[in-house]
Image (cartoon, rainbow, N blue to C red; front, side, top):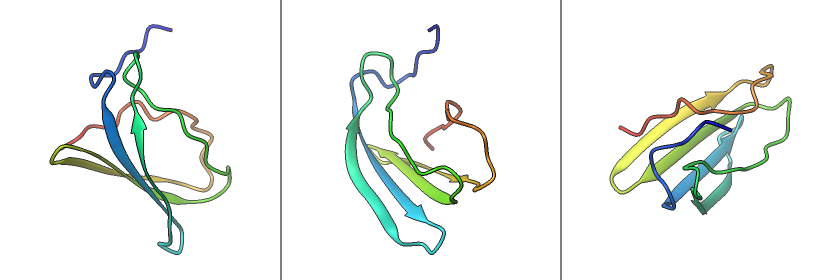
Length: 77
């Protein structure tokens, strides 16, 4: 594909919380040669996702009714 993230081969922290704000994932992921990570979450559930690199963090929500399977617009700030 033609998509390429800005952080190539970097370790990022990903924390995922369920709808009850329970921490269900807290791990480091490598962005790989394309600058993206791959992870699987159960469809039909709501999540809050925190992505961190160095001192930068982005938080975004995944709605339980979404059909979106890729989140390429996440920007660290």
